Image 1: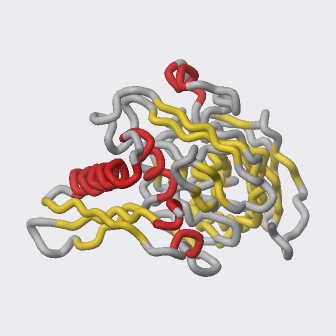
Image 2 (image 1 turned 90 degrees about the vertical axis):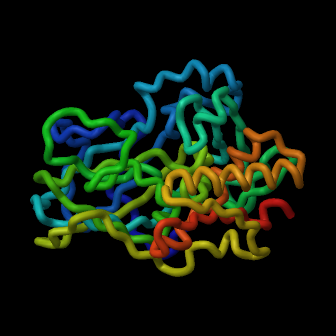
Length: 317
């Protein structure tokens, strides 16, 4: 909850969303710098997956309707070269979420070729833990996976890859209390937000987190002439306290290719979880995606680099 936040001056409703980035989209609202807005964000499936969904629904999803973002919001006075300041005040979770293995998507897509789905239910008021069947409880940390402004280049651009102006960043630490700075490339900035998550590990290795619809409250402001090259952000305090309590199991991948090292580190963790806790491989893969962290541990001792995968023990206790 946000105890010191201003009341939202505008609500951007769930129906006020779009797919992809396009600087010709008409603004949903025009606001002054310093305005607080509340966004009714859909989940990344745009409501195609529900608490009653089955794995067949994953196989039949319309991928032209993924990662809807609410907006865009035109901020008066925003010009190319400025920075849009996004003060993330609050998330209001729904209590429902899902995690899926989507064929052809994810770090280990070549190993996991069949769809899989886990539907989550969690306490939206206490934000305690969320049960992963009988296999573990994942501490929650809500955030918006997709958050950005319109690019200068004309035309419709895919929502899937992250961009210089933000977009599908999937940074877990863009949580309540964090301030994000985005490079402005078009007049008004044209800010949009969506793809809200209840929890995610760094890397989102299977391609999905705990995808969860929820309301998001942010304040939009400007820094004139900031000339940012890429997004940056600052957090209000520690970022892993919700996972650190009992330490970690850690596996590594070592070699001359960071991507292959990441694949090896995650594969080795999946093998460990399956051997110790009798998970199926796809269950371990999805669980790694929502709570485990990929880290580059060493990148200077050529020709080999070290990628580590940290799995929090608190999930299993």
